[in-house]
Amino acid sequence: MALVNEHFLKLQGNYLFADIAKRINAFKVTHPGANLIRLGIGDVTRPLPPACIEAMHRAVDEMADARTFHGYGPEQGYDFLIEAIIKHDFAPRGINLSPSEIFISDGAKSDTGNIGELLRWDNSMAITDPVYPVYVDSNIMCGRSGTLGKDGKWSNVTYLPCTIENNFVPEIPNHRVDLIYLCYPNNPTGTTLTHEQLKQWVDYAIANDTLIIFDAAYEAYIREPNVPHSIYEIRGAKKVAIEIRSFSKTAGFTGVRCGYTVIPKEVSAADIEGKRIQLNPLWNRRQCTKFNGTSYITQRGAEAIYTPEGQKQVKETIDYYMENARIMRQELTRAGFNVYGGINAPYIWLKAPKELTSWKFFDKLLYEVNIVGTPGVGFGPSGEGFLRLTAFGKREDCIEAMQRLRKWA
Ligand code: PLP
Image (tube, rainbow, N blue to C red; front, side):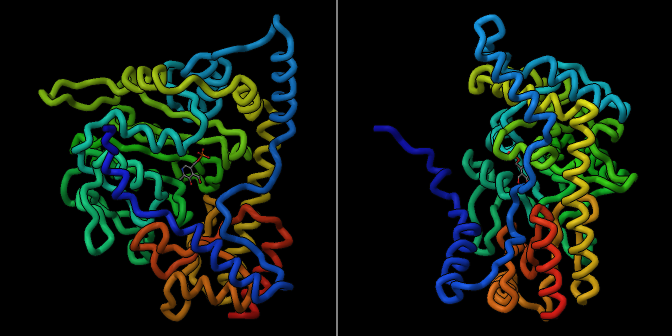
């Protein structure tokens, strides 16, 4: 008899997007002619940069000829992409990485979800609240989160509330934890940490022997100078942090699938006797066993992001989304809403007026102005009373939605 991993049975159904879909369907039945504008989507809408398309076409042609065909590639990724990443994403920021410290992946979700395999199930952990749900769920699956309390919180998880009062900057825990997930720029709040604020986290990690999993999936959206693009901009971070990146929101790769994880040689965890074990060779071993590499065609497409044309095209697309964000912030503020995020991130964190709950606010916007957002409470208890809006939509939809919201307010 095969016994099931009982930790999977503890997972709460992820009903957020299913619930949203249900409510939208019910609305559509009763309002068949309504022009619904969706500002809740977390997916990009602009096509891939032409430089990536051309590179992928060339790669397909190579695959069509026995002399240039590529079969299994290196599990860690091709050198051409790793070298482009080091040269463009890290060297200009004064960060020295060797090729063996970069692992190309099929996206940040897999790596944020799988990285915990390197760590014992009984490490303590902390997350910011609200949070990208993968960090919690992947830890529930291996039993690390403990048991679910009546307050909806997991017993072995330290929740770090990100609220209006603390400007969405989580407070450093007053006790030590083994593992912490940080995501900056943040999904869902769209807020960031300054260099000084991130340094406090790195200093905490060094002092407490804590491992930081730093999710930088939205790094390309940073506009302000004092916001670090990589955690390794902070001195000492290489000893305590793993950084995960994605080409999904940078270059429209959500459907293509490519990202990477940086595991410096210095980063280590302890075995039960206290001996330090490097995590880089462990992840290498894990990838060689469970992952057969990102496709050659995809990696050639990702490499093209770093060409001068690719960089220009990526910038144009990000500028487009960030102009949406700027318009949304401006119009929502004018309409009297309290608006957060949207300056260094494609997400706007909107406070519901009149103490409405997230779901009440969601329903009101759906029925009264035909606009769809994502209820903040779906990202964690501290998201209650907020709605997440994204800037990934079409410009004309954004403008129309803001006009409706201004009238409504
Ligand atoms: N990390 C965060 C914070 C995200 O918001 C997302 C996607 O929405 C991901 C990771 C997943 O990225 P990918 O498409 O590379 O798997």
